[in-house]
Image (cartoon, rainbow, N blue to C red):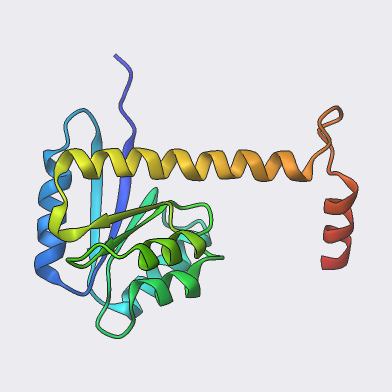
Length: 165
């Protein structure tokens, strides 16, 4: 029997009670092993995400709610470059807001959930879609910077990389 890969979820939310609710929902998901770390402090969240972008801490997905000092969208904007390859699901408060959902997508969120409507099935589905979304985005990025025939960088990517040196 093949060993099942664990998925490390980083739950960032200023509300300890919301963290415990989502941890409970994650533990209700059958068929996958999730390791969950929760953070309610902005400084600690910064530290963990920096470690992840440096490759010293592995995070597979981030569930992001509001922190006391900063809202989720602003936090997402601040860390979009560092967490570009990590799917982020924005956890919104108790109302559906089309504008907030659009902002989250435009800022790089791979998923969006209402805290008040969350259940284990919806969370599992949103996690799966978010992971797939980031994988597809990376495939598209690779296609856009490489030559289809030779698999070498295309001219535009070569020029961009030369400017960086």
